[in-house]
Image 1 (spheres, rainbow, N blue to C red):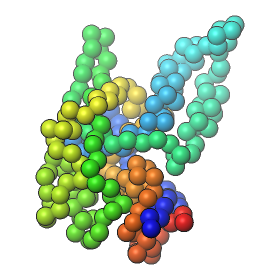
Image 2 (image 1 turned 135 degrees about the horizontal axis):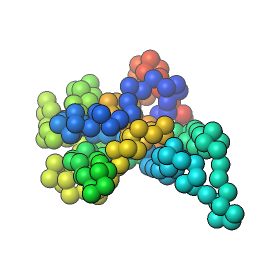
Image 3 (image 1 turned 180 degrees about the horizontal axis):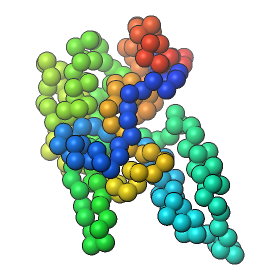
Length: 208
């Protein structure tokens, strides 16, 4: 029976993507984690950081000070374990007439669950696929993601480069297997309960 895997403390190696890291990401095109719950708060944070007067109430056009906006946004994004996530791959940059830069990604199609990993060989292979999702196989293990051709045809996701400098982080790199299980697969794990000591070292625990 599957058990639920949840972070017991923040020991993930994942890092927020910043604008200056985009060229490197476009070279390797690794799998990235998108926090969809933070898309709205990130947009608001970008607006109020330009000027709090850009967001007003419908009645009376009242505004809030930046400090209060930050408290609101911190509260709105304070429970990442309850957020909705998806996996994406970076593909190219778009530049508009106003000089705005947009990172165009596509949603990754996952064909096999990381929570169903069966061996140490699978673990090593899946870690490779996170940074090299274009590979068909690794040490005989098939890629759990769709082929590059299918991935490029996936749903496009556009992220403003400027939004990556926000306090509200929404895109992450340097993912681990446990990040995928905990964030994307809802903590469902059929295998790792056989090695609970190792999971505790990594900062995860089971929620039965």
